[in-house]
Image (cartoon, rainbow, N blue to C red; front, side, top):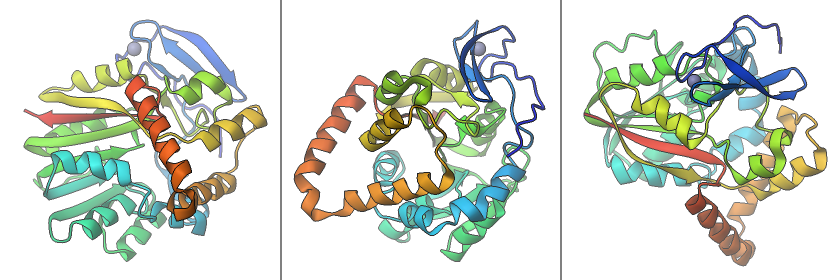
Length: 305
Ligand SMILES: [Zn+2]
C-alpha cells in the first residue's frame, strides 16, 4: 500500500482545520480536532476508499479464513439482533457489504422477509457476494444513482472509519431511506477497554482507519444530519484475545493473513460446545463492558423523520 499523502483533511465531523497532534504510529499520525475533539488522520493514502480495497479483495476478503469467519453464523449475531429489533422486514441496503455475509445471514434466518442489496468498492468481494445470492451494486455509494429506490433500512457495519469523507455517505443514506426507515452505524470505539489498555499498540489503529470515533463524536456526526433522529446508541463486541496478543506484540504490525487467521480461530471457539462455561463468562464480561461503554465497537440507530 502506498502511503503518499494526497489530502490535507479537515475534521470529518465539524470541518475545523485546527488540530493538535495526538499519536504517531509509524507512518500514521493521528490528530485531534480543536473544536469537537474528533480524532482522525490528517492525510489519507491515495484512493483509500477505492482501488486499495479493490486490490485487497482477493488476498484478504476472499482468503478462506476470512470467508469462513464472515460466513459463520455467529459472525453477525449481535448486529442481526440489533437490526431485527427495529426492522422486521422490507428493503435493506448494506453499504460496504464486502462479501455480503450480513445480508446473506439476514436472508437465511428470515426467509422471504427482506429484499437485500449490497454495495461496495471491492469488485472481487462483490462477485463473491453475488455468488451467494446477494444482489449487488458496484462503485462509490454517494455517486451512485439508485433510480428512485427507497429503503426501509441502510446499514454501515465498520465502514465510516475507512472513509476520507464520511458525511456524504450518511447524507446519501438519509435521501435513500423511506420516512420512518432506519440507519444502522457501527464503528470502532476509541473509548473501548482495548484502546484504554493498549493505546496506539491496538491493531485497529492502522492506516486503513482514517476516523477514530468516540461516543460523542459519532453522535455529533450523525445528529447534525438533517431529518435523522437518534433512536439508540451503545457499544458491542469484545475480543480479549486481541488485547492479549497486541499487548505482547507491543504495537508491531499485524499482517492481513494473521488478522484473518485470528478471526477464524475466535469464530471456531465461539462455536465449540465444550467451551460453554468460558462462553458464559465471556458473555458476562462483554455485557458488563457494553453497559460501561467500553466494548470494542460503537453503534447508533437513527430513524428518518
Ligand atoms: Zn471537529
